[in-house]
Amino acid sequence: MISNIVQQFSIVLAIGIGYSYDRLTEIGAAGLLRDVGIGKIPADLFHKNIESLSRSEQKIVEAHSEFGYRAILESDHSLENLAICTLQHHERMDGTGYLNQLHEKQIEPCARIIAIINTY
Image 1 (spheres, one colour):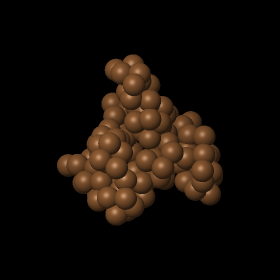
Image 2 (cartoon, helix red, strand yellow):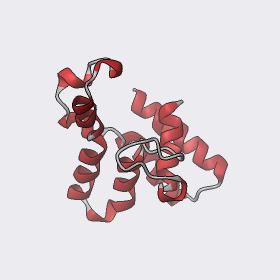
Image 3 (cartoon, helix red, strand yellow):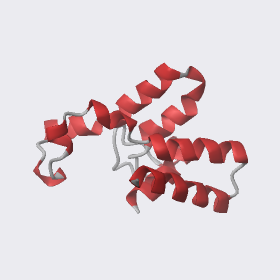
Image 4 (spheres, one colour):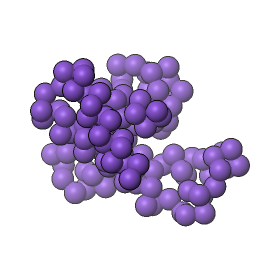
């Protein structure tokens, strides 16, 4: 359910920005698939309160973005931009996000939209 909400709100934001139909489709897919890698995270860690995770446990949970990236690319290499949106959806403009602490223009615009809606 939450994935559908992120998908729908991401599309609405992208429409407001003026994205093309092709980009809207990609952003919608990224909103839906952004957390596809969570299936690779041990359930006991995923259900823990984020504040109670050790740094090593937090790194494991954060890896869901990379797992999703790999899963999408393995399914279809032509979906590289979608995979990058999935990989970067926890990056923040000021470099405080994860996995790679990217800044501003280093972050794919699609991932920026997903990040905004996912946080909201």
